[in-house]
Amino acid sequence: MSTPVLNVWNAEFAYRSRKALRGVDLVIRRGEIYGLLGPNGAGKSTLIGVICGRLKLTAGEVALEGADPWNTPAARAALGLAPQEIALYDHLTIRENLEVFGRLSQVPGKRIQDAVTRAMNLTRTVEREHVPVKHLSGGYRRRVNIAAAILHEPRLLILDEPTVGVDVDAREALDGVIRDLRDSGVAVLLVTHDLEQAGALADRVGFLKEGRKVLEGAPRELVRQAFGEEMEILVHLPIEASPEQRTLLVGEGLEERGSSHIWAKLDKGGYTAAGQIDKKLRKAGLIPNEIRVREPSLHNLFTLVADWRRAA
Ligand SMILES: Nc1ncnc2c1ncn2[C@@H]1O[C@H](COP(=O)(O)OP(=O)(O)OP(=O)(O)O)[C@@H](O)[C@H]1O
Image 1 (cartoon, rainbow, N blue to C red):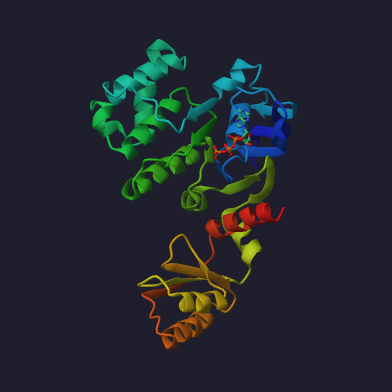
Image 2 (image 1 turned 90 degrees about the vertical axis):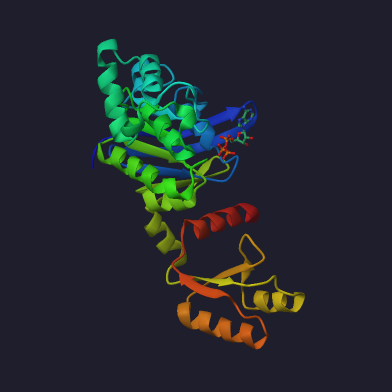
C-alpha cells in the first residue's frame, strides 16, 4: 500500500469550551478518494481547518506529506482546496482566472501557461478556455473551481461540497474529473452531504458524529456489514395515505421517506416481502404506483448513524 499523504492522529480541537474534534484519526493515501461524511455540526469543517493549517490542534498530531501544516509552509503547499463557495472572477475567462490563481498559488511565472493547460485538461474545461466564467453553467464553474485548486499540483486535494449547484446531468462529468484526479495519483478528500456521490466515488468513507469518527470503510462493505441480507423496500403512493391507511403502512413496518408519498422499510424478505405488502395495500384500496426493492445504500447507513445520535 502506498505511503499516506495525510496522517491525523488523535486530533482534538475546541472552540473555547466547545469540543469540535474528540480524538479523530485519519489516513489518506495517494490515489485514494476518501469521503468525509457527517451531519451538520459533526466537525467536518473543523477537521478541514486543521488539515489546511488554519486551526491549531488542542491535542494530537497532523502530518501532510510528513510535516505539520500549522507551522510548515511546504506541507500547506502540498494541499489544494476547492472551497464550497465558488471563488472565480465572473468577468474573466477560464484561462484568465486560472492565470490569476496560478500566480496566487506560487506557480513560477514561466510555468503558469503549462500549469493552466494541464489543469484545464484534467478538469475537462479546455474547450471553453476563452469563455468568461459568467457564461458557464454551475457544473462547469465547479470544474473550473477545481482546476484553480490543482494548478500547483497538490498531493492532497480537498473538495468541499463539490455537487452544490451542479445539476444531475453535469454530475457525471464532475465525477469523471474526480476519478481522473484520483487516477493521476492525487489523494482526494471529498467532504459532502451528497451520499449518492460519496457512495459512487469514494474508495473509503468516514462518518463523523459529534467530533468522533464513528464508522469508516469501503461504502459497499460498510453497508453490507450494517444490513447483511436486508433489502430496502420502497413504496410509491399515488396519493397521500388516509389516517387508516397510514396505520396500515406503519403496521407493516414502513416509514415515510422524505415525502408523504414514499414509504420504505428494510426487510430480509426482499421481493417476497414486497409482494405481500403490495397485496395488503391493494386489499385496503391503496394501489401503489410502484414498489421497488433495492440494495441498501449509504443513505440507509446515514439514517442509522443519525439514530445512534438520537439514542445517545
Ligand atoms: N467559530 C466557531 N466558534 C464556536 N463554535 C464553533 C465554531 N465553528 C464551529 N463550531 C462548533 O463546532 C462544532 C463542529 O462544527 P463544524 O462546522 O466543524 O461541523 P460540520 O460538520 O462542518 O458542519 P456543517 O456540515 O454544518 O458544515 C459544532 O458544534 C459547531 O457549532
